[in-house]
Image 1 (cartoon, helix red, strand yellow):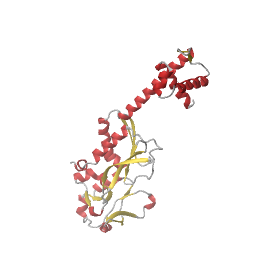
Image 2 (tube, rainbow, N blue to C red; image 1 turned 180 degrees about the horizontal axis):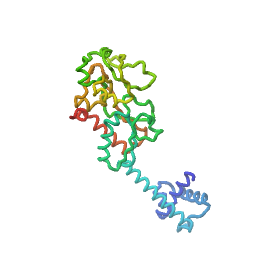
Image 3 (cartoon, rainbow, N blue to C red; image 1 turned 135 degrees about the horizontal axis):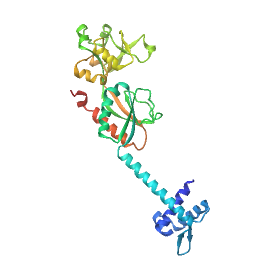
Image 4 (cartoon, one colour; image 1 turned 135 degrees about the vertical axis):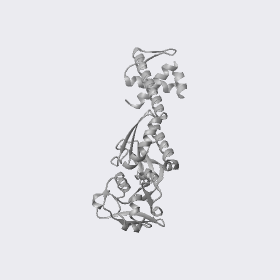
Length: 307
């Protein structure tokens, strides 16, 4: 169906609803002759006469009555659809698909989601943990959490939800047996537990530190390499060695005192955590309220420091 048929059908509805060509022309702010041309064009396209016209009267033909009733119903359906979608975007509801890194998702995002769904019961959450869904749009995601590095693409927008740091952590039992490192190079004397990203890098491991705003890499070594941050935390708590991780991974352990932070002056302090979402003109309310919820929760010192 061509666009002009839709326009002419709406014109036809206006003529019947307003009761005359002149009244419809006034409503559309166009001349009566334009209205007449549109009706004639519609009738020619349909190859049927819709309106019996005289100089003084206007009546629907049988076909015109059938067409009018169908068009009236279609217009009502469109108006209902517009009202529903407008309400859908104004009132948070529907399915919200979220992707987040495994550690941040398990430690912090899942408890936040639990509280969120209690506050917004009409929103359903599908939480996907891990980095296998890095492409939001291709995987139909509504939102993803990124630590530090955001994808460089115009297809996404983002909001910063909090800022965290990195650190080197060890258990009190470990420091009973080993001196606390004072500078990063002291790590040569310590058993450093390694987070394995790529198996090909097994022979060389480095931790990044900062001095006078310059980044330096310090070679480290240890007797345990794991591809899980949570497993590294457990090993560190057991006193096996030191770990170098984002502070959000060990929030509870630092509060409880089962881990101690060292080398703070040399660790990165400004790791941004972003919520990214597809770049679109109208952000669904379910996405907007969830991001607002995260910012209020995670951008507060009360959250990170509460006992």
